Length: 87
Image 1 (cartoon, rainbow, N blue to C red):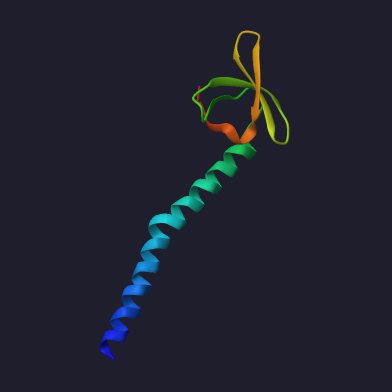
Image 2: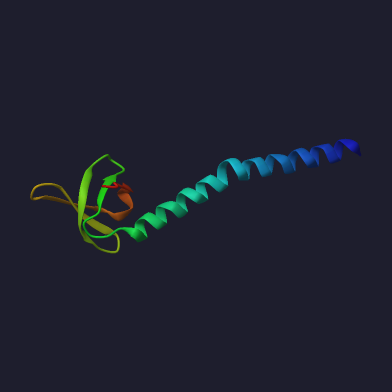
């Protein structure tokens, strides 16, 4: 009987640790990424997940055009933006 409670308690502790160490941080990253996507605006300096630095020229639902050099504009997925650069 005592062994059953020990097994149940270890299982609950394992589930709680899994939630705290894996699921909760992932949910926070997803929430932060969604907030970043919502806060993008024309003229923002950003870095893509591929390491390309650029300035946002146009924003659409799922696409963004970045100016990466003078008169060089590329179109990419909006979700490919990793972060804003504070200037």
